[in-house]
Amino acid sequence: MGECPQLRSDPNAVSEALENIIPEIAKGNPETWEAKLSEIAPELIEALSVKKEPDKGLKPLEGAENGKVVMRFAPNPNGPATLGSARGMVVNSEYVKMYNGKFVLRFDDTDPDIKRPMLEAYDWYLDDFKWLGVVPDQVVYASDHFPMYYDYARKLIEMGKAYVCFCKGEDFKRFKDAKQACPHRDTSPEENLMHWEKMLAGEYEDQQAVLRIKTDIKHKDPALRDWGAFRIRKMSHPRPEIGNKYVVWPLLDFAGAIEDHELGMTHIIRGKDLIDSEKRQGYIYKYFGWKYPRTTHWGRVKIHEFGKFSTSTLRKAIEAGEYSGWDDPRLPTIRAIRRRGIQAEALKKFMIEMGVGMTDVSISMESLYAENRKIVDPIANRYFFVWDPVELEITDSKPTVAKLPLHPTDHARGFREIAVGNKVLVCTEDVEKLEVGSVIRLKDFCNIEITSLSPLQAKLSDVSLEALKKAKAKIIHWVPLEGINVKVRGPEGDLKGIGEQGIATELDNIVQFERFGFCRIDTVSEEEIVAYFAHK
RNA sequence: GCUCCGGUAGUGUAGUCCGGCCAAUCAUUCCGGCCUUUCGAGCCGAAGACUCGGGUUCGAAUCCCGGCCGGAGCACCA
Image (cartoon, rainbow, N blue to C red; front, top):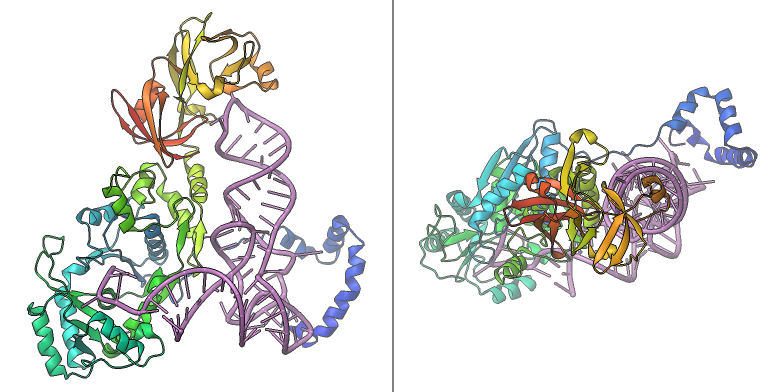
C-alpha cells in the first residue's frame, strides 16, 4: 500500500483479500512461487534479486548546496588530537569534501589558564590533518582576533545588550538561579563603556569583573540566563606573538559566535556538550541580525579499551612518567595510533561508520582494527619474530639458505632468504608441550622430529609436508641464531624477542609478525629494532 | 533543583521527518564448517534487536501521552 496509494481507499478489502490468499500461497514452496511469478508478472522476477543496499557513508547534510558549504573544526590545542577529536576532524572534513565546500581549521585558543594551549599542539593538529589527507582551506587562530572581539563587545555594550558585572561568581549564581537581575544589570551603556575600558586597561584585578551578555534573566532554562562573555586574567598567552598583550579574554560562546559568523559558517557539527551554545549565542545573532549556521550534534564517545580520558588527565600521567609521551601506544591519541600503523583510511571509515547520532556510543577498538586489517593485510610483508626465545638444535642439518615468501598469497612481492646453521630460535610456549618423538613443521623451512627436550634437540624428519598437515601437526615459526633484537611496544606493554634480519629494511612500514600480529617498524638501529603493535 | 536531548542484536549503524515496500539493513563480535605451510586473510553457514505501558489507526520501530533508563547544560573551561 505504500507503493500503491489507490489501494488505501479501501484498506479493509485489501487486508481481507490478503487473509484469503495467504494460506493458499503458504501451501507452495519457493520454486512454485517463482514459477508462478514468472508466469503472471515476469517483470518482478528481477526485483527479487535486487538487494536492499542501504546508503553507505554520511547522510546528506540538510540544506547543503554544492560549492557553498563552509564548515570548521575548532579544537583547543591544549594537547594533541585524540580519538575523540578524530570524529570532528573526519566528519567535518568529509562533509566539506562531499559538497566541494570550504574547510576551516580554527584554533580556539583563548584560555591561557585552565585549558592553556600547548605550543607544539598547533603543529600536531596540522600534521594529523595532513595524515588524514585533509588540507584545510584556511587556518585561523582565535587568539589573533582579540581586537575584533573587543569591537563587537563594545557594540553590544552600546546597544545595551551587554554589561560589566562585578558580582562574585557564587553571588551571581544565586541571582541567576532566583531569576533575579544582579545589581549591575541595569547600569547605563555609558557607564558600562567606562568599566569596559578600565577592564581593557588592566585597571581591575583577576576575577573582579566580567562582561555579560544580556539575555533573559527570567528564562526558564537557567543555562541561558545572562552568560559571561569576557573575563580578566593577567597571564601571558603561550603564543609569543600574543604574549602579554591582553588581560581581557573572551569565553568560548562569545569568541565562537563571532568567529562562526565572520567565517561564514553554513553548518556546524559538534558534540552535544555544546548544544546549548546555539541558544546562548542565538542572542548575539539576534542582536546583530545574523543568521545562525545549521547545527548537528553527536553524543559522547566511549572506547571500551580506554575508558574515560581527558586531555588533562593524560597530561598529568605523562608528566608523572607513566607514559613515554603523547604517542605512547597505550594512549588514545591520533599520534599514538598512527605510530602503531593504523591507516588514515581505516580511521576515517571507523568514524564515518559511527555516524552523527545524538546517542552516546560505546565502541570497541576491534572495529577500527578490523578496518585496518582489511587495508593492511594485502600490503604487509611477513616476518618471523620470536618472543621468549629458546634454542633448538637440529643435529643432522647442514647450513643452508631458507627461502620464504614475503606474502602468503602475493608471491610476486618476492622472497626473504635466511641463512640457517643447525640451530634456530623458537618461542618457548611453542615447544613447551612437545615430547620426544613429536613431529612439527618449522614454517617455510623443514619438518623435524624432537629427539631431546633438554637440551632441546631434533632431527630432520622424512615425513612429508602433506602427511604432516594431514596429521594436523604444529607449524611454528622460527628465527636463525643471527637475528636482531626486537622490542614490540603495544597497548599491553613491551615485549622483547628476536626477529629475522630482513625486518631492518622495513623502517616505517607495517609488517605482520606471523602468528603474532601487525606492527609498524618504528626505529631501526644496530642493536635493536623497535616495532609498535597495531593489532592481531 | 531547573532546562534540554536520546533509547533498534554484545557493539556500532540503516529505517523514524512523510505509518503499510520491515518476518527490520549493513558492519563488527561470537559460534559452527571449509580453505590456508601464520594464531592473519578468504569462503560458507548460524545466532542475535525495535526500552516499557497506554492511546490514535484497517495497520505503529515510525505519530501522541506517560513511566523507566541513559546523557548533556546551568563555569570568570573548551
